[in-house]
Structures are given as structure tokens and as C-alpha cells.
Amino acid sequence: MARWPWRWRVLLPLLLLHSSPVFAQEGQDNDPSTLFKRASEMMNLRKYDGSLGLLNAVLEVDPNHSEAYRQRASVLRHKCRYKEAEGDYSKYLELKPGSSSVEKELSQLLQAQNALESAYGQFESHDFSKVLEYINKIVLVFSPDCLKAKLLKAKALLALEDYSSVISETGFILKEDEDNLDALLLRGRAYYYLADHDVASRHYQKGLRLDPEHSELKKAYFGLKNLLKKTKSAEDNAAKGKLRVSAEDYKAALAMDPDHTSYNVHLYLGLCKVLVKLGRGKEAISSCTEALNIDGELVDALTQRGEAKLLTEDWEGAVQDLKEASQKSPQDMGIREALMRAEKQLKLSKRKDWYKILGISKTASAADIKRAYKKLALQWHPDKNVDNREEAENMFREIAAAYEVLGDEDKRVRYDRGEDLDEMNMGGGGGGFNPFGGGGQQYTFHYDGGFHGGGGFPGGGFPGGFQFNFG
Image (cartoon, rainbow, N blue to C red; front, side, top):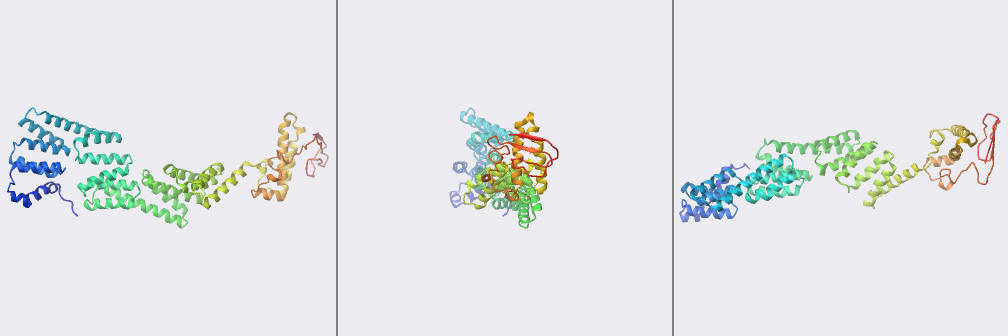
């Protein structure tokens, strides 16, 4: 459908009026009083374009019709054609000087004109709330049919992310002129930022059918099309197991419009899932956090961030996220299973690392374990650490407890599997294995080629002929 030239849209009501049977029957086409009466009726019905055409006709027939100048000035003020309106008010005052009511209307015109100029200035300064204040409280009060003000208001609302109001405001404009390109663009953008992409695309397409070379509509339409295409590529590659390619696609999609939060939340989540599968925990945490910053109730993002924190060994963080996700979705067995894994890892992280205490790797042989134990037992022998005996006793106790677990093949296997050995009194040496005994028991070590005592030391011998007694 081709867009009608503005002249036809302005003159059409007048032409229809002249062609109506009633009008023709009256035979008063050129009667100023009849034309003026009809213009007043149309103005009361807020049909400003029709009223304007009739008033133009009145003044063509009677150039000194003062009330026609005043009424046309009022119509022009309503449509914020301020310069023309000011001229008509001036003409009225020439014909009827000293009219206080017209002077008041002229003052209102100047107020509306200044307020509209101020609104444009505030828009350039990005003070969008001030824009709305000028337009709602002044401009649209004195100029209720000001299309420029209505479009500026919609732009300010869009900048303030009040998308529902943008849709409402542009709806009123399109009801009057369904082919208004600016309104189609703004309304399409509002639907776009609400992630209603199908409706947004339809608005862009309608505008482009009216003006195929409209730069802003082309940019919006093809930008949306490319975003959806890149998103589909990311999802398809993830489904095919092409995780690295998928991650790059998600990042490219996010870079297209960082402000499109209602859609980007799903892109961040998709990227997070891919990064978790790739084992890139730190990046995954960042991506899921971005999703949660947009929507803090997104259970899937909490779950995936918990999984990512498991990858980075942030056990407490993982438990916190997964517990919150489980509370929000208590029937999800997958989340409960992940939470159990996180809680187990957190518990394991708080137990003694016997390998670290003995200074050996987890792949150490039995001989390596025994050798490390003997070396450390000698190093931290309390009688050899008189100046720091308390520290030596604590270290000696830890070393003995470590050997009690790692020196026993069955206990070592269970420890490596993450089983709880607390019931075996292996909770860190505090209430379990104690090389110092309980009632003043004496431990005697003879370093003469053999190693003897009541503290559970294995045979094997330390060199030397020294004897140490401690109780």
C-alpha cells in the first residue's frame, strides 16, 4: 500500500465534506459562516486536519474573518505549528486589538514552544525524565495534537526502557496515521527490547515496504535478522558438540547489542552451559553471573554457576548456589545430585590432607610413604625441638596420624575415594592416633640400627646410636 502524500491526507476530509449530499443540498459551499461552523464542529471532534482545511477555505472567501484567524491559530497551536499560529494570533489582534483572552492564548503558545525546545535540549543531554516532564506538563497540555512532541515522548520512554508505554504511545500515533515511519520504528524497537522479535520484525518490514531505503528501519531489521542467525548457529553448534565454535558464536551474538538484556540473559546462560562443558569454570562463572544480574530468579543460571564453581574448587560458593537453586526448584533431582556432590567436596576440603602433611604426591608408593614418615618423625622429634616442643608435638601427632591412614592400604584407598574416616578416629589427630599416649606412657627410641617404642613406629631403623625419652 503506497503512502498518501500529506496534502491529500489534509484535504481529503474537506473534499469529502464538499461531496456530501447534505453539503451539496444546502448549496452553501462558499458561505463563510457555514464553513466556520463546520470547522468548529470538526475541531471539537479533534479532527484538526479537517478543521484546518475548512478554516483555510473561510479565509480565502473572507480574509478579514477575525474568528477564523483565531480558530486557525488554535488549531495550529494544537499541532505545534507555532510560527504559523503566532502569525494568525497577530492578525486577529490587528483586527480586534486588546483581546485579553487571545493574548492569553498567545502566551500559552509561547510557553508550549519554549517547553518543546527545552524538551529537545534535555533529550540531547540524556535527561529523559525531564523531557517527559516538559512534554506532559506543558507541551501536550497546550498542543495536544503535536506529533513531534508525541514522537519525542516515545523516544524518551524508549531510552528509559519503559517499553510498554512506548507501545501504548506509538499505538495512538499509528491509529491516526498507520503509515507513520517513526512510530513504526519506535514501536518495533520496543517489541524488540521485550524480546518479542516476531512482532518487532513485522513493524520493521511494514516500514520498509513504505520506504525501502529508510536507513534506521534497515539497520533495525537486518540487525535483528543477524542476531537471530548468530544465536541459531551457537545453539546448533552446541547440539553438535562443537563447543568451542558455539562459545565464539554466543560471544559474537552478545556483542551485537549489549543493551538487549531481555534476550541477552538467555545468551549468557547458553554461553555459561557451553563453558561448563568445556571445563572453563572461571569464564562460565562470569557468564552465569551476567545472566543472574539480569534475572536473579533464573534457576538454570544458579545451577550452572554452581557447576562452574565446582570446576574452580570454590566448594562453599558451589554449595551456596546449588542450595539456592534447590530451594527454588525442590523437585529437580539433577540439582539435588549436584548439591550433594558440592557438599561432599566441601566436607573433603575441610579434612586433613595427609599427603600434604607428609610432603608426598597422591601417587606415592608405600615405600615413599614410609620413607617420608621416618624422615619427618625424626625431624619433628620433640626431644630434638626443645625450644618449640609444643609445636613439635603437634606436628609429630599430625605426621603419625597421616601415616596411620596412608600406611594402611585399605584406609588409604577409602581416603582416596573420599569416604568419611571419622568413625575410625582419624579426624586430624586430635582425638585419634596419639603417639604420646594417655597416662604418662614412656616412648623410648634407640637409634642403633633399629627403631623401637610404644608409639606405633614401624621398624626399619634410623642410623645413629642416640636415645631419646619423652612422655
